Image: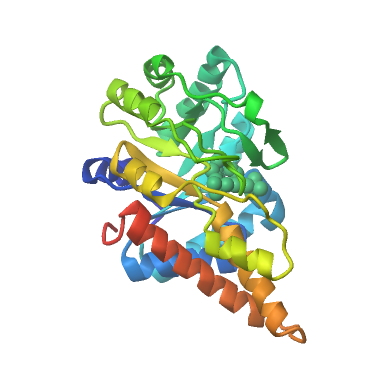
Length: 309
Ligand code: G3H
Ligand code: 13P
Ligand code: ZN
C-alpha cells in the first residue's frame, strides 16, 4: 500500500469515535518501535517529521525509512510535516512525497494565518495532499521557538468557521490548554473541553487535532530521575482526558515527548546497569522495545485505534 493522506483516516476516526496517533520520528529505531506496535495491533499511523527532525536526520533518510516501514508493515501510513513554518517548507515536503502537511500560522494575525494557510491548501490539494492548520497558540518548546504561558492563547471558537471555510484546510489544531514538552502544568492539569465542544458544534464532522498531548508517562520520568536525570515537576496530560478527547471530534493526537522519555529513560537505565557497554545495538534495542510498548499502550488504552487499519 502506498502512503495515504489523512482524509479517509480522519473520516473513519471521526465516525468511529477514536483518534489516530501522530508520532514524531527522528531516526530508525523510533520509526521501527512505532511501526512494530502499529503492525501488531493493526492500527493506522501518522508518522510526522518536524523541521528539527529534517535538519537532524536529513529529509531523504527519513522518507526512505518511512518507505521501508510501509513495505514491511503494509499499514496505512500518513507521512506528515509537523509545524511547517513556511510555504516553501510545505512545498519541499510535498515535492518529496509527504502526503500531509501542517502549516503553522498560529503566531500570525488571523488574516495572515488565513492567507498563508490558503496558499498552502491551494498548492497541496491538487497534488492529493491534506493540510492541517492551527488557530490558538500552545505554550512550550518546539524547535527553536519557546512560547511562554503568557504568550499562549486558547482558540476562539467564534473564529473557526471563517478560518476553515476561507482556507479549505482538512483538519484544525486547536489550543485548549495542552502544551509542548514535558512540563505541561504547574498545578492540577486542566483542559478547556468547553472550547473543544464549542468548536465541534461549529464544525460538525470536521477533524480536530490536539498537539502537546503526551502524558509524560510517570514511570519514565521516575526512571530518568533514578538514573541520574533531573526532571522535577514533569507532568503531562492525564490519559483519561486524552481518552475523552479521542472519543470526541479529536481525530489526531500528537505525541513526541513520551517517545523521547521512553527512549532516554531506557538508555539511562541500560548504562547504569551495563556501564561497560559500547555497542549501540545493546542500548538502542531496549530503547526501541520501550517505544514499541509505550505506543502499543497509547493505541489500545488512549487512542482506541487498534484494529482500525
Ligand atoms: O511540536 C514539536 C515536536 O515535539 C517536535 O519537536 O521540533 O524538537 O523535533 P522538535
Ligand atoms: P508533546 O510534546 O506533548 O509530545 O507534543 C508533541 C507535538 O505536539 C508535536 O507536534
Ligand atoms: Zn505540536
